Length: 222
Image (cartoon, rainbow, N blue to C red; front, side, top):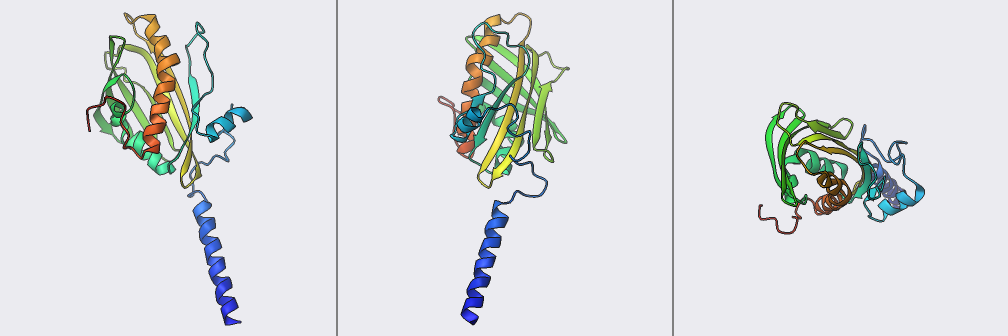
C-alpha cells in the first residue's frame, strides 16, 4: 500500500512538472493568440511549421513595393533567447545579414537602441541610422529611421513580434517597409525587397537556430 501511494505521488509530481514545462511563462504572448497566425492560410501555417520562412505577400516582378511587407517564421529557440539575439544584440546584424557592412551601436537610451548601418548593393552604398524600440512586456520590437541623421534611405520601418510556442520554439512575425532616397537607383529598392529580403530572413533563421554562433559566408569579424 505504501509503495502504491509513493508511486502515485511520484507520478503526480512528474505530471505536474511536465505541465509546468509546457505552460508559457505568465504574461508572455503565445501562438494561441488570434493575432499569431493572422493573415496566414492553412497552407502557409503548415509551411512555417516545417521550417520555411514565409513571405506573406509574394511580390511579382514589376509590382509596386511600397508599404509594409510581412513574413512569418518559427525559430527553434526559446522566446527569451530569440529576444536576446535579435534585440539585446541588435548591433550584431552585420554578422549574418547579406550586403550589410556595418551595424554599430551609436547609443542605448532606456529601451531605445540607436544603430548606424552601412549597406552596399551592386556597388551602391547606403548609410543610415535606425532607432529601435524594444517592448519586452509585449515581446514587440520595432524601428524607424532617425530623422536627425542624413539617411540615404527615405523610409525604413519595421517590426518583430514574438509568440511563445513551447520551450524550444518561437513564432515570429516580421514586417518591413523600405523606400530608397534621392540619388539611389530604383533597381536597388526592388533588389532589397524581392531578392535581399528572403535571403536576409533565411540568414536570420540560421543565425537564431544556431544560438548566435553562425556567421554569413565571407564574414571576417568575431
